[in-house]
Length: 276
Image 1 (tube, rainbow, N blue to C red):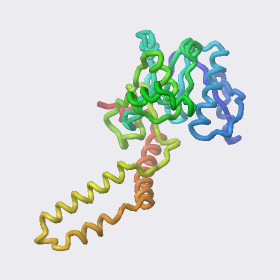
Image 2 (cartoon, one colour; image 1 turned 30 degrees about the vertical axis):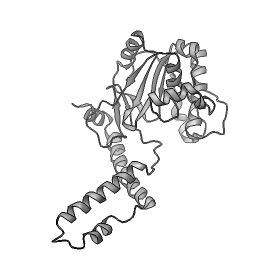
Image 3 (cartoon, rainbow, N blue to C red; image 1 turned 45 degrees about the horizontal axis):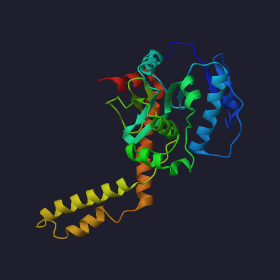
Image 4 (cartoon, one colour; image 1 turned 180 degrees about the horizontal axis):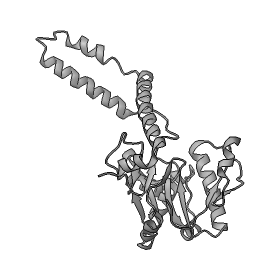
């Protein structure tokens, strides 16, 4: 889905041997990367920044960052975003507003190597940088998850530069976090590294449902004289481990359905999301 010359720069750290041969191709360059003991997001940033240097040394004019579960859905995506950079934006990236994460998200980022060489933004920020007064100001203005991409957002903020925010554009969806299309350009499954957690919002929502149920039964107390007993039976004290299991099972069911349909006919599934 790309109509301009490109190369894919890849690292194979921790890749199983049986999958290594899938990376053989004229347009794929496997790069030797320095190892790290970091895990998860820190590891991601560490390796990506090494790949950036390989691309720049190789003479690439622009860099596009994709997660393993994201890809373009339109063949003109490069030209469209080049025009955005020509308009004055320094970066185009997914913004995950559905997670209240108002920073460039590393599931897709696009920028010129000229910008990177000039400003050299980091993908992640150090603990010292996150203590800076200017960072606290940035965090207040643009609340975000301080993972990969936050360094780019902070650098743009400090330099008073703008970036093109690619927000979720598909109105048809199975889940607010999974299988999103952004600016009708890039698809992101959003479930490859998804970890289930119980949030304060979950607890608040549970308490609100319990209180609503209580008010309904109380209204009909002539039918349900022991309405508090009934409420406590259906809504016992919040059980975090049990709730996490139910939530995980619910999300896994949706995720499995999405993966099956995406794998069976990618074009049909993507087009179904893009339909207005």
